[in-house]
Amino acid sequence: MAEQELRQRKPAAAEADKPAAPGAAVKQPPKRLEFSREKEAERWTKLISSASESAPPAAVPYLKMMAPVLSAVLVGLHMALPLILSAAAAVDKFFQVVPAQLLVAVFGALICFFGGMYPATIAAMEAWQQAGGRRAYENARDLYIEFKRVMHKSAEDDLKDEDGDGIADVDQISGKELFMRKAHIALTTCDPDKLNGAIQGIYTGWVGVIAVLKIQFAKTIALGSAIGDFLYSPALRVATPVLVHLIPEDYHRWIPSLVLYVCKSIALSIAWYVQRVISAFHSAIRGGLLCSRGVLNFMNSRGIIDFNDTESYLDEIVGWSLAAAGFYFQFMMGFSMPFPFNLLLWPFGVAEWYIVWTVSS
Image (cartoon, one colour):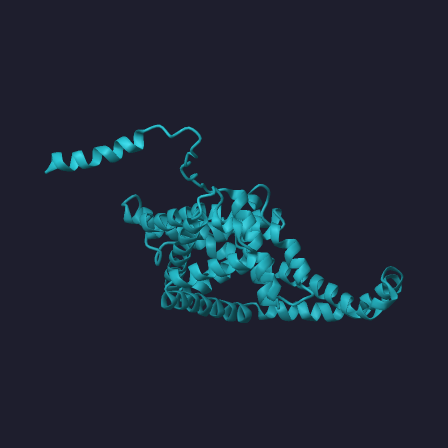
């Protein structure tokens, strides 16, 4: 039976091995398409330009003008996402491996020396844990899994060349057709129940965090509003004679609003600086005690020392010493992250700015 199949295959193989007749067209094998950042950016530009057509007419030219920049940012985020997730997984593994007492000590040291630099971010992290941070983490993980499935299907679609001309099909269609094609892939790939549950869980947690922060920083917002109202009248009297010569006459009616926005911004900056000083003092004390008790309890569990935090004063002595060092460090740094740590911790700076803006609005 095997010999018979071999005889049946030989003529076809021999036919395939025959040289092509003179003048006959030789069929070239289809080219293998590969991922290209430039092509990916062009596709995102087409998608953004197509989606911007449904925006208000006044915003359409600006959205189309920003499309190349937004596409470059999206491509960069797409490429950096695996690294970010790997770092998050490493941090999660670190939390699971390190003993609880040392985790408390590490957290205490961080808020002792840096608590006044990121007061809103630290408060948001604590509120996030109280509002169900573990559940929200699982929701974010589900959302990422769905996103990864869609991106995988989209990447496969980007390499399709059904007509065999060596050019991807997605590069030969209009922006509207590309938008509809990618939307079809997303809708047919995602699990709607899982996607809806993940978004709802994250949104509910974030609303809870904002509610807690608005109550926690209500005095700061009230202080900023009071300072802004105090500055507005004298600033308007001083700035109006100058601005009427700098701003066209058609826009003079906007001068009071412009002065008010500037005064509010300055006032909120002053109020949040005062809050940073208060938070630095409070976090230095709290973090110093957490750090000292975490380290001493860990040493006691390992049999290195004999320590009981309800009877000994050693944790207070070490904790208050760390608190003094932590507040002095933050004071010398002007309650802002020094260079080059501000570059390494820029995500926390962005998060701090966004949380402050959200709570103050």
